[in-house]
Amino acid sequence: MKALLLSILFLAIAVPLAAQNTNAHAIAVQYYEDGEYQKAAALLEKLFLKSHSPDDFDLYLKSLFKAKQYEDAEKMLKKLIRQYPGVLKYELALGRTYKERGEQENAAKVFSHIIATLPEDEFLIRDIVNELYQAQEYDMAIEAFLQGRKVMHNEQLFTYELLNIYRFKKDKTRLIEEYLNALANMPQLLPQAQNVLSVLFETKADYLLLQNALLKRIQKDPQNESYAKLLSWQYIQQEEYEMALRQLIAQDKRTKDDGNILFYNAQIFIANKAYDTAVKAYTYLLSKGKENPYYLPSKLAMIDARYQLLIQGSTSKPEIEALANEYQDILDEYGLNRGTLFALQKMANIQAYYLSDPAKAQESLEKAISLPGIPPMESGEIKLALGDIYVLNQEPWEAILMYEQVSKGLENQPIGNEAKYRSARLSFYQGNFSYAKSQCDVLKAATEQLISNDAMDLSLLLSENLETPADTLALKMYANAALLLFKNQTAQALLQLDSISLKYPRHQLADDILLSKSRIYIKNKEFNKAATILGALVAKPQKNRLTDDALFTLAGIYEEQLQDPEQAKQLYQRLITDFPGSMYIAEARKHYRKLRGDNIGS
Image (cartoon, rainbow, N blue to C red; front, side, top):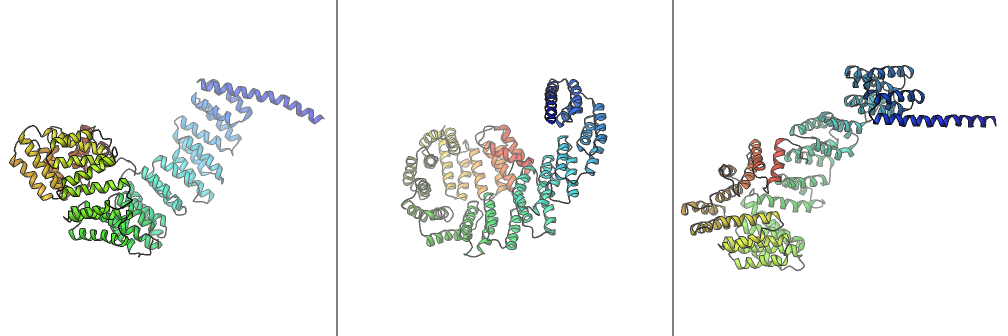
C-alpha cells in the first residue's frame, strides 16, 4: 500500500513536470522559428541540462550557431566532453562549432581525432559519418568509412555509401576504383556501374581512366568476367567497336559461352551503324556450328548487316551478287511465305538498284503481292516498292496504279501519305510540274514531318522555277537528273546536272544542283568533293530553303568522314543560331553538345 502511494505521488509530480518541459520546448521552437535565436538558446540550455534530450541538444546547438554564440557553444561542449568522454556526439558537435566559426584547422583536428579512435561498431561508425556528412565534411566522411573498414577488418563494408559519396563529389578516379573493388565480389553491381559511369563521364579522357584501371585489374585477375564485360562496354561507349569485338570474342572463348553476350553486343554494333564489326561478330557466331542456338539468328542478322553496307556503298559487285544469292538461298530453303517476305523484298531492291535488273525485281515483287494473307501494312510497303520498280521499267501508269492503291487503301496513314508523295514525285520526273505541285500542296499539311518537308521542298522548287519557258526547260533537265539519281545511275545524273548551266546559263537552279551533286559524291564516298561543293553553297551570303540542309550535311561530313570536329562544331553552331526553325535543329544540338564535350547520356 505504501509503495502504491509513492508511485501515485511520483506520477503526480512527474506528469506536470513533463507537461512543463513539453510546453517549454514548444516555446523554444517558436522562438527559433521566429528568428529569436538568443531567447531560444537560453530556454533550450535549461531544458537540455534537465533532460539531456538529443532533440533539445540539437536545437540548442543550432540556436547558438544562428545567434553566433560560438564561445558559449565551445565552453558547453568541452564541459560535456569532460563529463561524458565516451559520447562522440559532443566531440562531433565541437568540430562543427569550429567549422561554423571558420576555424577549419581546429575542426579538422577534432574530426581527425574522432576518425583515428573509431570504435569497433559498424552502426556507430555510420552515425559518425552521418554527422560528418551533415556538416558537409565529405572528405572526412570518406576517411571515416575507410578507417571503419580497417577497424572492422572488412574491406567490403560501406561499399554503397562510398559509391554514393564519390558519385556526389564527382570523384571519378575513386569511384572507378570503388566499383572495381566491389565487382571483385559483387558482379551484380555491373549494370549499376555502367549506368552511373555513363551519366557521370563527360569526355573520352574519363573512359580512358576506366580503361587503364581495368587493364591493370585484368592483369591481376584475368578470370574476373565483370572486368572483361566492363572493358567491352567502355570500348563501345568510346565507339571503338573493333576493340570491343576482340574483347568479346576472347571472353566468349574463355567462358565457353553459347554466344548470348556476343549476339547481344552485335546488335549494339548494328544500332551504332558499325556494320563491318557486326559482320565479323556474326561470322564468329556462325563458326560455332548449326547446332548453336544463335546460328540462324546470326545468319539472318549478318545478311542484313551486309545489306546495310550495300546501301552505304561499301560493297563490291561480287559481294552484291553473293548477297542476292544468299537471300535467294533463304527463299529456296524456307519457301515464299510471310516469314521470308523480308528476303524477297531486299533481294528485289538489290536486283533493281545494284544489279541493273529491274525486270527480275518486278517479277519478284509481283509474286510477293499475290501471296495470300499479307496484312495491309506489309502489302502496302511491297506495293510502294513495286511502284518504284515500275518507274525504273518505264511503266509510269503501272506505278501510279500501285501508289493509288496504297494511298486509297491506307488513307490518312503515314504509308498512305508516302504513296501520295511518290505519285507527286513521279509527276515531277515526267515534267507534269503543275500537277506535281498541286499534289505537294495537299501533302504539306501531312502530320509526318519527313513527308511534309519533302512535299514542301518539292513545292518550293517548282514555285521558284516556273516563271519563264527557259526556267521550265531547265527544270525538266533537273527532273531528268533526279530520275537518273533515283535509278542509281550517278554518273549520268552528274553529266545531266552539269549540262543544265551550259544549255540554260540564266536558270535559277544553281543551289539545287550543288546540293544534288553533293549527294551523289556522298553516295560515291567522294567526301572531299562533297565538302567543297557544300562549302560553296553555305558560303553564299543569302539564306534559302537549302542552306540548313547543306549546313547539316556538311557538318556531318566533317564530323564523321573528314575527322574535323572543330569545323563540324562551328557548322552545327551556325545552323542552331541562324535556323532555329529547321527540321535538323534537334539533331544539330545533340551533335554540337557531343563535340563540345557535354554529357548528353548514352
